[in-house]
Image 1 (cartoon, rainbow, N blue to C red):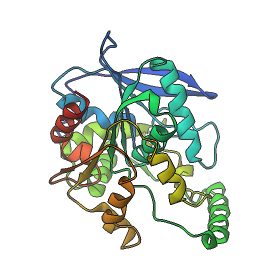
Image 2: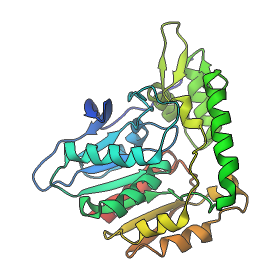
Image 3: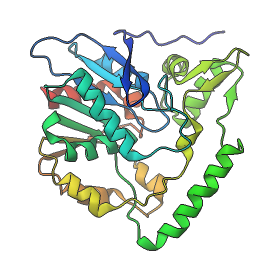
Length: 304
């Protein structure tokens, strides 16, 4: 029996935009109109733009939503890269806004890795953003210079593993296997949404198997240490209002086991001049899947 699949209420169209020698895949919901501020929504690590479908469907109004697949995710190619550098995401976003909103500040939403990207970008190009929403883009634990030799060694070792094929993402015989994987990772994801998302999170090959639309090079450790002092300098330059949304599940404790905590994150947010912290109940890190209606309501209130 084929499980019932989620039925999208608002349908997107795909566009391909030339950005820094890549054909960037961008999903668009709605239409531009005078006085309508573009709503740019960027996804996280090992996710895709289509992941925002459930939130877009839950909006009470029709917004002009622009959601790219980051390089090496979804339908955007990686350009042959064997690892990814964070500054590239900032530049890609800058080029994307040049294309869609060259003279208009946008409302900008980022989840997880995308949240980290928009926070840094907002400190570099504050004039391009009207309202900023960060969905658990927590940043990373503080580092020490003494960690640099080991970090570079780990980076080089992982590159060798990648080129030996040891970091390849597994494929699935059927799309239902992808849906099951999504639900195993996030038990709150309902079966109908998992079936819908699986068809955008993976693609069918000529042999009939389904492969995740994420370049395994994204699994490579960043060679550069995370420098909190640099990040806070950028946070201080975020001049637009920020809404920092958290889920009721404490993902930081689960990920870092005390090495980086929610109070530490809140302390970093004090560097942002105008910040509001909101919490979504009965949700984990993938809050846009778990409670799309609650998240949509928060976003719409904030950008009104």
